[in-house]
Length: 84
Image (cartoon, rainbow, N blue to C red; front, side, top):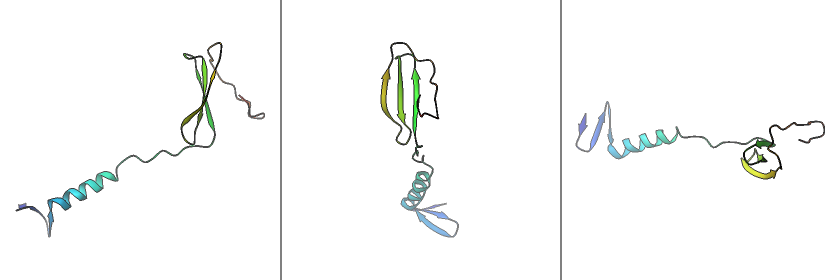
């Protein structure tokens, strides 16, 4: 029920401004959370540009772009020697 510029809500009277503020604050809580990164790097083979991209997973940024003469089709990690 609306009374003048107020909305009657059961036992309390709420103005339109406060009703809008409550709705906006509830909607703001449903937003996306910021992504958190991971330790380490990802190596991405890109056949189209004939290169391997090195991506820092803690900031999701490109660290290095390594070009090749032929398109890379796969990367083989060697964990014992920490090489790719």
